[in-house]
Length: 340
Image (cartoon, rainbow, N blue to C red; front, side, top):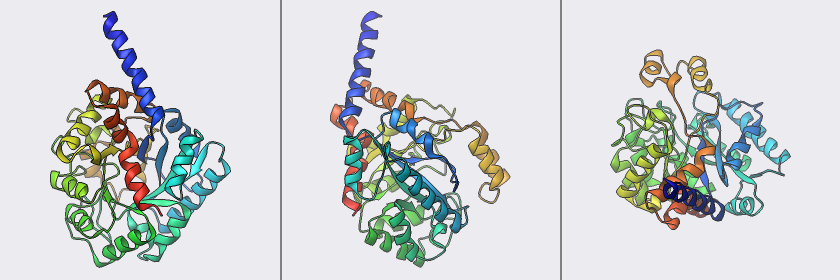
């Protein structure tokens, strides 16, 4: 028993060293968007060892004006708290945050309804700090199909949006996007396409999860699949442990290679948040779907568990180099190529 404890202690120390020596990238936080939100909760990512977090400022259920207000408010809040946070405009800002032991924060959009059907808004959001966006959040819209709706191809407006995102240097995300639309996006994008917080459907057959050919297409673009830590998307018994999320990492790494898997925990810190959102936006989550998806029972891998994931990867015989890739370097590589 003593030797086992020593081994576990040594592995934990090794995991901490890996995190300290590398960029740790959580590409999406599952936080409700409010234009008056106090962002002090972001300290939990920094304390958990993260270098970078992608913070949602809008999703398709919100009026576009509210998403714009959120982006403006979040940017101002981060600028006012520059002793602890760095707003990301270019990749060098992430590297500076690492050097200065601060948390780098980029903004993201979940769904293109925030554009008010006007692709010129992409540049405006980009100037506010939005560095990644998907076109649809579960439901179909004027740009693309959503993963829980009728499976439709990418629309003309969606194609124009992808071209504009490529032009300004915004990461193209296909999480929450329908199958046909996601495959169209990965065919036409001139920059790597990512899934910020999506899990393999082969391990848990949920409509929010990805088919193998979607992940292979993502890898062909040079992109990365970010594995989320949401219980409902990980296991039949809704297990929510670092071991379970590592099972999903294993699957993607074996399918498309170690260079194309990372983390997007989609962590919701307040346990009441999901049930409250379901009540607030019944058009997005009709009662029948809310029952099917079981929102009230969701659990999440939290930012404080980032070291546990690194430790679990080492215990499964991943090398230090590969753990660094999974914990952040893969997403950092793509961001460095796209953010201009």
